[in-house]
Amino acid sequence: MSFDVASLRRQFPILARPVNGKALHYLDNGASAQTPLAVLDAVRTYETTARANVLRGVHALAEAATESYETARADVARFLGVAADEVIFTGGCTAAINLVAQSYGSLLKPGDEIVLSVLEHHSNIVPWYQLAQRAGLKLRPLPVTDDGRIDVSALSSIVNARTRLISVAHVSNVTGAVADVAAIVSAARAVGAKVMLDGAQRAPHGPIDLPALGVDFYAFAGHKAYAPNGIGALWGRPELLAAMPPFMGGGSMIGSVSFEAITWAPPPRRFEAGTPPIGPAIGLGAACRWMMELDWTAVGSHEMGLTQRLMDGLAAVKSARLVGPAGLQGRLPVVSFVLDNVHPHDTAQILDSYGVAVRAGHHCAQPLMDRFDIAGTTRACIAPYNDNTDVDALLDGVREAVRRFA
Ligand SMILES: Cc1ncc(COP(=O)(O)O)c(C=O)c1O
Image (cartoon, rainbow, N blue to C red; front, side, top):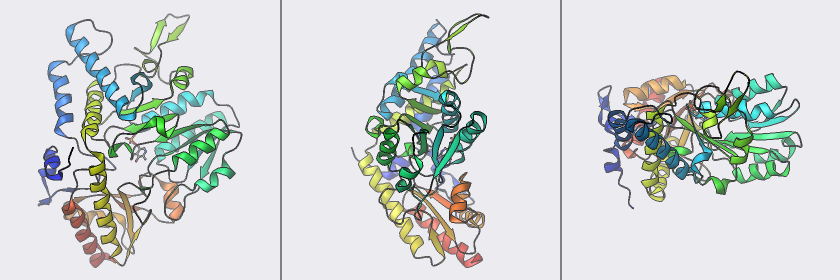
C-alpha cells in the first residue's frame, strides 16, 4: 500500500472549493473532519436502494437495511479490534459517555470516586459531575504537566480503594498529548477500578487495538472520523455491558413488555432504543473501512511531518507559544498555540481571510485553560488530506496576525 496525498485529496470534493477568494486550507479537523466520497456513496446507496427501518421489517428493503446496519457495526468493531455485539451505535462521543455515566453510573454507590483529568473535554466532565451530584460520588481530577500531558505520577496519590472508574481522553483535544494508557490501566487494576477512554481525537488517526490497550469502555464520534454527523460508537467489555441497565427506554431495546413487567434485550440492542440513525451508522462503517484501507505507517508519518513543519514554523514566530508537547513523541497532530497580545479569535479571523479554517477558544476544556491561565488557544488539527500548503498558509496568517495585533 502506498500513500499519495494528491490522490487522497481528490476523494474529498469539498477541499477544492475556494473560501474568501482563497484556496481552502481545512485545519479544523479536530472539530469535524471532512467526509470522503466512499462514505457519501455508502450513505447514498442506503438511501437510494435500501432505505427502510431496521430490525423489525420482513420485507426486502427492511432486510437489506438491517444487513447494511449490522455490517457497519461489524466494520466499526474490526476498526477497534473487538466483537460486533460489543459495539453500540450512539449519537456521538458525548452520547456514548453519557450512556456510561447514566447506565454504569447507576450501579455506583455514594462515596465512590471517579477519576478524570484536568485536560478533559467538557463531554468527559459534565456527565460525571451530573452523576456525582445525583448519586453522592466524588470526582478526583488528575493534574496536567506543563507540557499538557496527564500527569500519571499523580495516579498513586489519587487512585484509591474507593475509585470505581478512571475516564480520560485517549488524546487531548487541546494539546494533542496521547495518554499513558498502560500506567492508567495498571493503577486502575490495582484497586479493581474500570477504565474508560474518550477516543474522539484518537479515532481519526487509524485503527485502534482495544484488546492491547486493556481498557473497559471506549467512545468516539463519527463526524471527527470522516463519517456523517449524529453518529458515534461506544465499546464496552461484554460482561460489563451485560450487567448494565438500559439508559433510554423505547422500541427495539426490550425482550418483552407488559404493564406488569418488562425485560431487556441483550447488548448492544439494549442500549439502542428507538429507530437508530441508520444512514449515519452505515456512513460510520464506511469511514472505518476507508480508514482501514489506508497505510497508516505512511499516513502517520505524513501527518507528523506536517506537525513538525507547523511546530517549526511557530517556533520561528517570537510571540508564539505552543500549548502542548514540544516534540512529536507521545502526541498526535492536534496543535494548539497562543500569540502574545493577540486574542485567539482575532488569529482565527485573520486565518479565515487566508482560507485557513482553525478552531479558536477554550475548546470545551475550561479546566485546562485555567491550568495554563489562558482564555483560549488557536488550534490546528491535521488530517491525512492536509499538505504543506495548508501548514504554510496557516503560518503566513499567523505572521500577519502578529504584524497586525501584537
Ligand atoms: C476529546 C473530545 N471528547 C469529546 C468530544 C465531543 O464529541 P461530540 O461533540 O462529537 O459528541 C470532543 C469534541 O470536540 C472531543 O474533542
